[in-house]
Image (cartoon, rainbow, N blue to C red):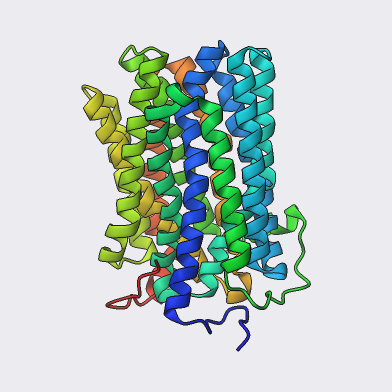
Length: 427
């Protein structure tokens, strides 16, 4: 029987195999992407460039990511999920290879520091504009093949792949970057992701493309869908929670170096361990706690917001490195709950034919978060002191609590979903 859009003709075992393949590919992109948060701050100081250049790289990539993910999501409604997943993985591989070459040239002194930074920015621009096709298409692929009752858990399992990559990436950076160099890891990740693109093309089942041929693809029309009252509260919440995450993520390495008076070498080591610990907490939230809770999107969003406030405030009073790591662990765990809640809620709120559009819009909130968060966080850090980004995160978390608990649109989705006693494991 041919596979059709919005149906689930495949067996549970076939679905699990497909989801595992997607999981592994997204994990590889997570390794490459999150390794940068440990590598870039020490690399920038080693090259002698100011912190705001790193913020600019994050912001450029995030702006393109935000603009393009709605287009890729809508295009996957027309052309199928698999072609867009393969295209995005291929673009990610190319962009990572370019980044590695730029880092190599800068560290070896073959180019000036700013030239190397501009080349890295170009590589991240390529990721933001083209590599961004993977996430919304993969998210929609899973949504196509799950019921509303099991969808939040299934999407949590998929997004945990990126979190697992966030554990492995900084850990590898801490252990081997100084020995093997930044370029080696970037080239290795590029090869692994390219192999993943080939595996998806050959092995991921998708026999018939979705037949939604008249959907507009221009960005203005796609962003207008974000104002649809069914998904608007999830878009607002997603933007807030991604800003808080990016504030913390982009500031952490600099915070550790200044708070603990660390040099470039120790800054890489300490920040990599903290980032890996936080990513581990995120994975536990998505793969262990969420299936055990069997909670509605509203409850996940509320719990995540409350813990975000708690973790951000604890960062202000953390007495030592262990306390800082605990605070970051708490905010990362909170983000795992919150992200799964709003992504699942938005998917449940729309029709099967709109899954690609909804996935594109919820993924775009990550881009918005990384437009505002890194530049805003590093500006606050530079102008108002190391604690300012975490004060801002606590304030934003409080706003997120209000949206999650009191917005009627979030309430409607929570009431509409009846959680099954034993939902099937997505992975």
